[in-house]
Amino acid sequence: MKIASFNINGIKARAGALTRWLDHAAPDLVVMQEIKSTDETFPRALLEDRGYNLETHGQKGFNGVAIASKLPLEDVCRGLPGDPDDKQARWIEATVTGPNHALRICGLYLPNGNPVELQADGSPKPGGKYAYKLDWMARMQARVQELLTLEQPLVVLGDFNIIPQPEDAARPEAWVDDALFRLPSRRAFRQMLHLGLTDAFRARCADTGCYTFWDYQAGAWQRNDGIRIDHILLNAYGADLLQDCRIDSDERAGEKPSDHVPIWADLAL
Image (tube, rainbow, N blue to C red):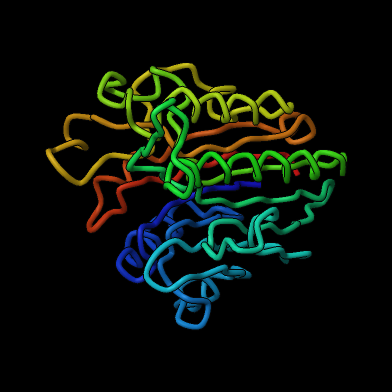
């Protein structure tokens, strides 16, 4: 089963880029981020006409996540638990069942966190975007810990807005003070991995120069000045099913592309 993540940067603006990729890549399931659409205005026919079941968690103008699957989507949950006042549409869950295994899917769009606002002691400023990012990651970790108790295959995938290691950026020195690469951000990501999750891409590929995002400005794509911030994490049951994981970087060269490209994993479900 081919499972993918794609930050499409606006479902309506990138409809062509999304459908071109769907038609030739043929994923069985894809989670999308930054759909930038409400549930009511999402152009469902783009997915449903291609045989996908669709569940969305939308928000007008920004954020928004969705899951499209050739298999039925069951037990769908919207929103990350832990803060009833958080109205940002960044988390969606569902279960799909293959011939041999049921898989819990968590699709996410993690907060960017910039600008980094700090107090005099260096801690994140309460109410700031960086504090929100770290708080959101703590809630995500708590939710994943709950899901790990189910003892079934689990995949947590999406735009994490985290550069895990220096080799995941063409110019890591340019990101030192950025919320995507600051040590507290990377430490929180490692804490997720230490729960027993596997970075699917790094489990299959140790190469440098492999990125999922290139800025639209300053010829970043042409110079391969990118970063790897879209990730697929698997629990032990899911990692046992991993057959391959790749980044479809050529999609960035297409007409009216997203600034992200799809990342996908093949699981023996």
